[in-house]
Structure formats: structure tokens, C-alpha cells
Length: 152
Image: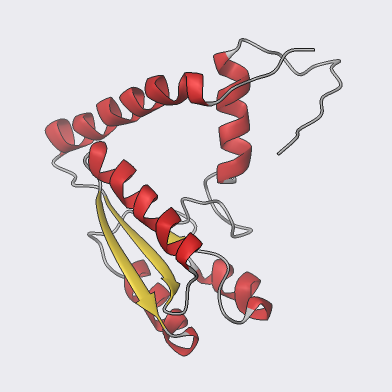
């Protein structure tokens, strides 16, 4: 059994993403912009997590607009980001105050902007599934005929 450590691949992945963003900026004039919509009542842990995402995005030259909004305003915030041509990606930072509305709000995000892959029609894979794929690829691991356990 082999333990896989994502921290070993983090630098490589970040460098690759930075190159891709530079290419978008230089060749196509696209300035990638991500909108993160979160509850105005988000816990300190969630606020810290969003700051980490924001720093990471800044490191690879992605502009980020964090919007801390009331539950009642989330639908409007998603709609505004969906209709803003300067926005390429939207994250609905979970959890939200009314967890019963999570699926409904995730489905409102335009499929081409749902970078966390939470909506049923998203053109992106789930962020967690993508991270696992990258981790396995980084260790040159094929899954066919394998039994795996994910811990953590």
C-alpha cells in the first residue's frame, strides 16, 4: 500500500495553472475573474478558507471578487455573476445558512462558470474528484482493476 501526499504535487500543479493563466492573458487578452459567493454569517474557518483560495488565485494571476451576502441575496448574486461577461468562474462557498437551499442555488450557477462542478449541468468535474485525478496522475497510478480507500 502506498500513501499519496498531495503536498508533494502542489507546486507542480500551481506552476502549471499559472502558465495556463498567463497564456490566457497574453494570447487571448482574457483576465480570468472568479466570484466567490459566501454567507455573510460564514464561520471563521470558512473565512480563512476563502482567504486561502483568494491568495492562491492571486498567485496565479486570477482576479477574485469575494461577496459575503445574506441568504436572501444569494440568488441575485449568482444571477449577477452569471450575466457578467468579465466573470469566468463562480464558487458558491459552502455551507450556506439555509442548507436546504444548497442544491437549488448550485443549479442556478451557469454550467460554464460552475468551477466547483457542483451543479448537475456543470461542464467541470467536481473539484474534489479533479483533485483526486490529479493526485493519481501525479503518481502514475491507473485505477483499472484496483481497490482503493480514501482517508481524510
